[in-house]
Amino acid sequence: MLGRSDGGRLPLGLIPNGSGNTVCFSLGIYDLPTALDYIEQGYCASFDIYRVLPDRETAPKKEDFSNCRYALMSCFLGYPPEWARAAVPFKPYLRDKAYILAIVKTAVCEGFVKHQFEVELDGKLIDSQASSIYCGMNNTKYSGKDIMWPFSSPTDGLLTMGWNQSDFKIKNFCSIQNRQTAGISEAYENNEKIYRGKKLKIMYKGKNGETPIGDVPIHIDGEVWEC
Image (cartoon, rainbow, N blue to C red; front, side, top):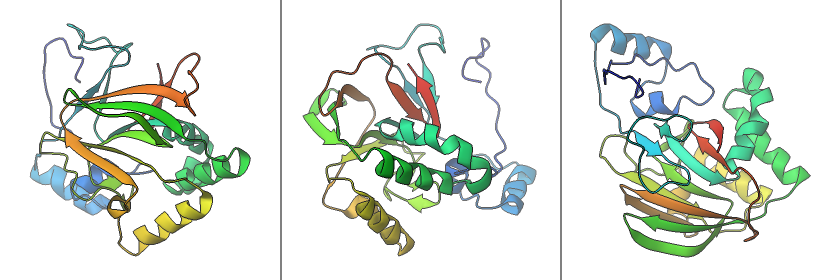
């Protein structure tokens, strides 16, 4: 829709039938009956959308989807694109739990190696040597059914970005899952770096600071963009 030449905009009816359903959860739609009630009543809500531009400082004058994507929920570099790819075969059977299996598979087969990033937010350098398994932004408090960053809102015009500085091991991941089950968010851990703003710029420096070769995958709303 954002690529329409006439600039037309239409309201969308959302039904939570995906593997994560993060957008629906963020709007208070947790099941099919609620989704149908929203659609029948014609209830509309605005939702922030973020333009993702690889290797560019400014947006193109015309929508060019070979060099541009839009994110409703999230956009991450690091391991999330790899996890998203690994989860695809399991999604029809495990739905949102497919991502957990993909993370466990990465931990068992490869182990976790930290990626290096340079992070700039609203024109201000935040960290030139950020080291984490991921770095990116979230537009809602949810990640699937889990509440990750509770102060993130999809309707305030601000993105929430961050990265985790801890050494990510499978036992730590299990601990995160247990905390979420208990209603405790990862966002309150001391190792989580969290900022809010409007324009995020991330320079990816590769695993362990090794210069990446070839395309760098980006995780956008649960899908992988090779760019």
